[in-house]
Amino acid sequence: MWRMARPRKPLLSRDRIVEAAGALVDAEGLEAVSTRRLAAALGVSGPSLYNHFRTKDEILDAVADAVSSRVDLSMFDGGQDWRGALRAWAHSYRDALADHPNIVPVLARGPGRRPAGLRVADAVFGAMTQAGWPAAQATRIGALMRYFILGSAVGSFARGFVDDRTAYDPADYPHLGQAHLLAERQREVDEGAFETGLEALLDGLALQYEALTHANRGG
Image (cartoon, rainbow, N blue to C red; front, side, top):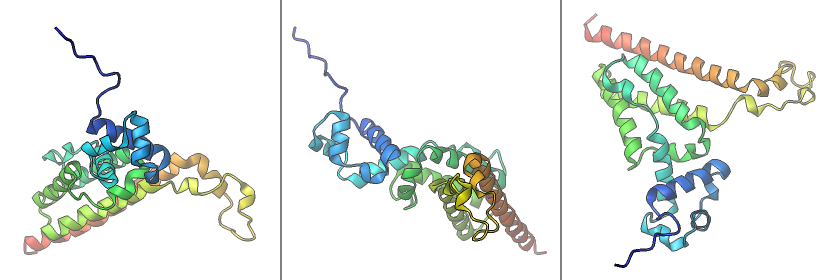
């Protein structure tokens, strides 16, 4: 009986393509992804990629959706109030983006037809409307949270300042005497900023929710 020879390399699959494309995006940015680069990384011919994806944009969409799939949505199952659920989701979303900031521009376009992205949108909207938010306001809440979370993942505020005291001449920048220390305190600064902004957003929404429930009671 003839035996089929085992392939020398793993068979090409959507998952392998997405993994290779994600590694390129993480290392070099969106512009690094091309049919030629992916084919070389996977040890295949360029045309074989088109058996799985029609365009580069489809590949990047799949990479973005793979990141979205790592976002925890269990907090929207009813065990937490809307504020606690939004807080937990924001942290999970930011954590998922932390190692993949280069894919944020693709995520910022919206979920489109991406399944994991649509599940995120559905979970947030559903939880807000079930908590009593009107549909229009629930939509705005999902949007503002996404703007905030994606914005926080684009780059580091602290790393935007160089570790060089001479760059901040007091004659020119009298209030930036300690700016050269920010880079070494990146995590403290950036995470603190995220927490401050998140709580400010939730506090503002809580005031709106209180007014909404008061009006619904006819007060």
